[in-house]
Amino acid sequence: MNLLSRRFFLSGAAAFGVAAGAGSAAEGQLVWKTADWKVADFHTLVHHPARVKQVYDVVQINQGKFLNNVKNSLNGLEFGFGIPREQIKIAVAMHGPTNMLNYDDFIWNKYQIGEWLKVTDPETGKPAVRNIFAKSTKAGGQEFHASDPSVEGSLYQDTSMQTLRQRGVQFMSCHTATEEQVRGLIHARGLTQHPEEITQEMQHHTLEGTLVVAAMVAAIALLQAEGHYTYITV
Image (cartoon, rainbow, N blue to C red):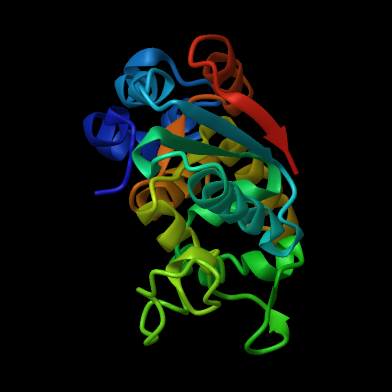
């Protein structure tokens, strides 16, 4: 089950404006309160007991190059500096355009996200109609479970969100960014849906394991101030 606010389940049809007078409910919830999301899961991340904790602040997609940096952090810490993998925790704070990487192929296809955000699918050379960053293309290969981290086909050289998540990386999505991006998408596509309808649909298609936070800029501050995560932006 994707990470939805409990309001999605409690409000039901009201959130979609079943009556003509329900516009205020359908317009969207720009600001989440603590009761609207899994704040306890975030606090668990903040207070993770790992020896080395790092938060990546990522706004621009840039063809997903930041995922290679995350992979390099994991490999450098574990193999170059000898930090046990269970003592490493990396959180990736995705907001701005990169927030859309937290949604599955259904969303990318339905709303033509690749065309909108200038993301090209390397397999077709055309705007991506799937989330090209989500799934591993190496997992089925013979070399995937090689113990040598320098083997190019191994999981240690895989920059997919799927494999990085399996290695303990926590990807985070920004609710505020989603609300703002939905409005931009409605304008760009000339859509007629209410913002909250599309927002709820997107969150219904959040990639499994993603932590949706109320506001990413605030989450980053807490990860640094209370969790003592080191900060990096790429």
